[in-house]
Length: 220
Picture (cartoon, rainbow, N blue to C red):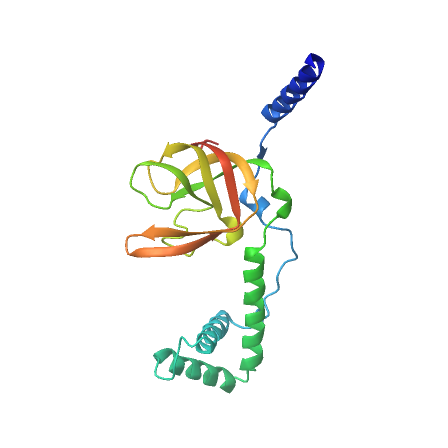
């Protein structure tokens, strides 16, 4: 009986030593994006002004289909004017809008795509800490984002460039977008959270979660 207990104890010691010696893999933001072939811009043959007009028209038509724009909306008239202008230039407006929509949908799909192989990996990565609410107190969770201004001053990063972080111990942030290094274990799962702003809240989706995280100020 004593021999069996010693064997079990030795196994636990061995496992504990292996976990303690596990080294975190240092990654950058590119690591979170699955490999893919480059996208081709179907509007590349057009001047930039025409490309912008096709994009605006596509957005207007999509909003119409979703019931967000009616015939009394000024954007409805704007769409008619853009389509008429492009048609008088000899452009196949419907075809160009359809090609733009195909490209947009593929970009959205890729932005949501994650690297499943990272699941369970112990990693270390840099980024900017964005608390869900900033009141100069210790936090236990936040979003890790790749650039300053993400989610507040500029559109949020794609889901595969947003990491939801859960700390092992609370951390007192000094400012919004504090540059940090975080070390933790990846879970490849989607997390939807609400980020507080001065004038309201906004939903943010993260494609990854880091758990049991340690954090330190960023140093190169």
